[in-house]
Length: 222
Image 1 (cartoon, rainbow, N blue to C red):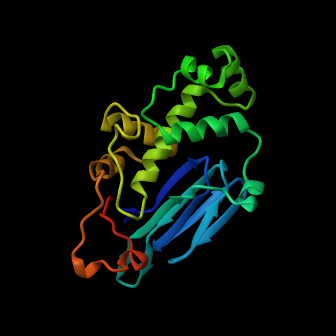
Image 2: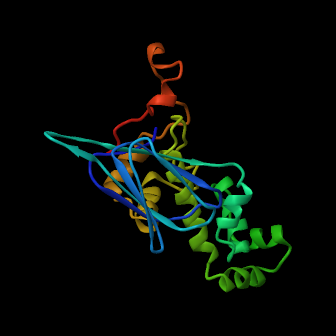
Image 3: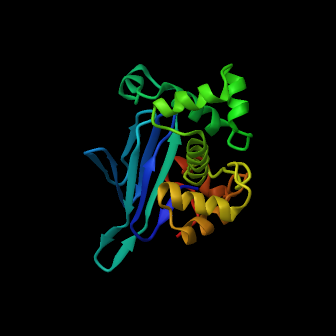
């Protein structure tokens, strides 16, 4: 599906336990982390190391008499290379481990008692481990459910799932969380979420046979 916007869009404080490859199909985007900024033009991509917080500012490409929408996709790599691991944020091992588990099964009950049982520690010890890394269980669960929702919205292969698959009770709850956590405006989130489908988008036969490698399959979200 990919993310499509006819207006400048800033998504902030993104964080994934796996390497995240952002590719710009149309328009341009800027990735920022700390004091570092990387500009991406049409056809370019960049992989953000695991658990490094970053923001993505996507904007249309302006041309005389017309503006092309910004189109970008997000792909998470199954395994991090040694190089990516060296560049990852290694300061929060417990948080990253739990974030990966939540992202993989966002609809699961992630209350402290269950997680503590998985880790064979007490709930108090679990909270202490996260607190020492500057994190809380409740905030992490919400963040990673939003991360899963964004990954669904931004996949280039056209597949995805609804709000329940991302662990939310309703589309409205998912839209509100996306606004609170990453700054996605609610009206945009609602339109985007409405287009989520567990099945890939159908294409005419003439548009297949490698077309996905050249052009993203997307719906104009915003």
